[in-house]
Image 1: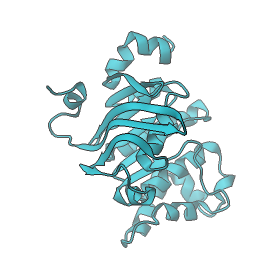
Image 2: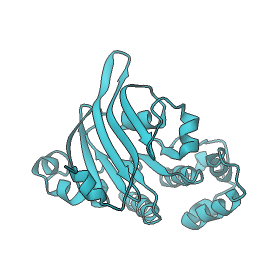
Image 3: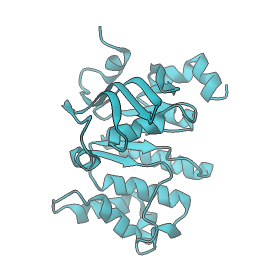
Image 4: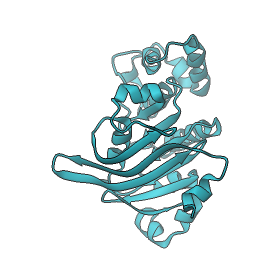
Length: 248
């Protein structure tokens, strides 16, 4: 029997990233308990949940920043569960970390170039211009130290830096955190733009309403377990999700 997510992915969208029965711990404290999620071709998948639910830990596990204690992670069917982080970047996984984490003393342009450090092709300059088209404010400030940018501009830089790697899957960790409502809208427009270009996205976001409104499929995490899953519209109609995360 196909799962509801397989129905949502449809026959044409092959799974790009699959996490199966994933477990992870910090020391003796287990944080993830048998997580199962999929990201299909061209899909935007949202993860919602309260602070401490394990959302950031899951992204770190997928990126190789923490070791997993059980389960598997596959990218296009190839196991990457024990691969080092740099190999995962080369394979096509790009993480935009929580808190942006730009290289503050370096210029905007140098930050962008560092996003392409694993690439050996001749199209990095072309992609740099593409980023400037996508984010005109970054072109205006390309010589400025990244630490001088506003929070919203730093978030745009962090996303652009990740896109410079030409990711096959883009992981976004709390991209709207700490931003004014107008800037949140801008960031979500950027995310929708990335989705429209066919980039598979796994989005962790505290703003559940915004995350579900653009999601093809979504998972709710509570204490390291998936408790509810479904399409974005299905979860927005779910009574439990409305009460816990949408303030309804």
